[in-house]
Length: 277
Image 1 (cartoon, one colour):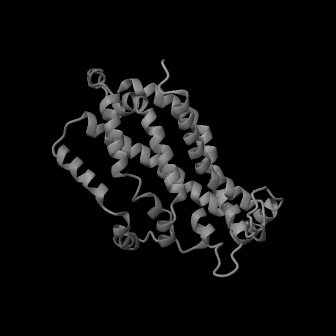
Image 2: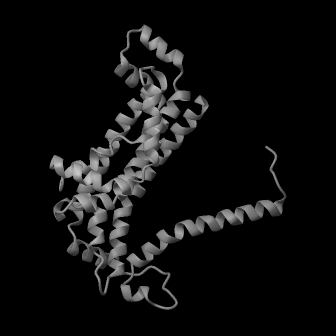
Image 3: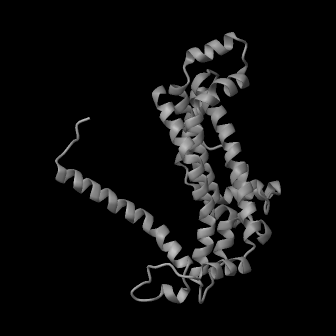
């Protein structure tokens, strides 16, 4: 393939890309630097940009101030449960909207898309009242049930299913006597793997980083998620920023591990599924 542009233009593009990469990774690099140094080192002028020897001490301070492993397990339970349920319900709903006809289909899908324009903050009070009436406050249920089916997830799966699943394959399955669930499991799920992988990563990260809603519905420290627990490390005076950054680093590590474990499979599936468009 013929390269586009002059050597100078390509060099400028590569330089801009390199600058973009450095700007993107600097916040993470700074978080690690702050985690390995003390708070007094952070206030130095010029700022210290080298690794220190305070990481284990800062980790100990985090464990002393919050029940880190309990909060970690709470967050993991919520994130995994929400991801699994979201993938199932959104994929089966998207598959149905894409490949089946039923009364009111267009109206229902239009209403579904209409919910995308609703601001999430505007529904907090109504959602809290509903959860309180159900007796779900201070449980994990408000963090899983209301968001296990999302309009965006259904829309994403529908759009992918429209192109990734041939109608002839659906007709062949019906001739063989497959019901809706069998068609979903044997035909739709294999074809939707790239879309499921992307939606799964997005859902897991969103659930892991969720802060506002857990802060509202959880009142017991034993049920706190990591994000809520880490917020308690911020004091009004004399905040130990190195401890806060260490806790943030520990909370970020699982997301990095999930990315490295799933990135190869996700990219391979996305490349394989691209031929279906």
